Image 1 (cartoon, rainbow, N blue to C red):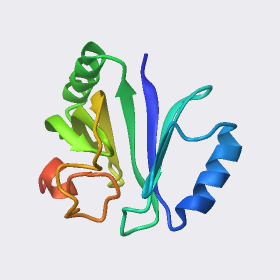
Image 2: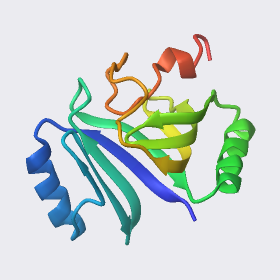
Image 3: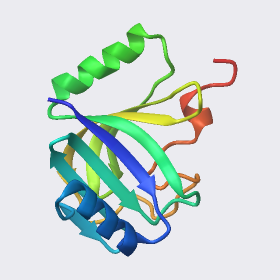
Image 4: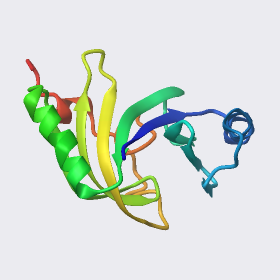
Length: 148
C-alpha cells in the first residue's frame, strides 16, 4: 500500500513538532535535532519537517511504497505520462537509504516516488546541500531538462 509523503521546511522545529503532533494526535516516529517524521495510519501519510531548507514552506511531495514492485509501478506511470524522471538507486537522505524516482510538476514542485530500504544514522551522504531543498531534492534542471 502506498503512503502520501510531504516534506516541509520549517523555521522553528520545536514549535512545529508541537503543532503537528497535536494535529496528528501522535508524537513523531523519528526525531532528530534538525528533523522529525510522523508515519501516520489515518490518514496514511508520511509527514517530515526539518530545519535544513533555505526556503521555509513546502519542500516536495511524494509517494512512499511498501515494496519494490509498487515503486516499479509508479515509475511505469511516469513513463506512460511521458514526464521527465531522474532515477536514484540506494540514495541516502533524510536518515534513510531508498530507491527513488524524481519528477517535477508544471509549477516546479518536486515529486518523489520511493521505497525505503533501511534507516541510517546520518541525514545523507553529504551534509552539504547544493540546492534550496530541505531533503536532498535534486536541482530542477537535473530532473526536467530545458525545453521539456
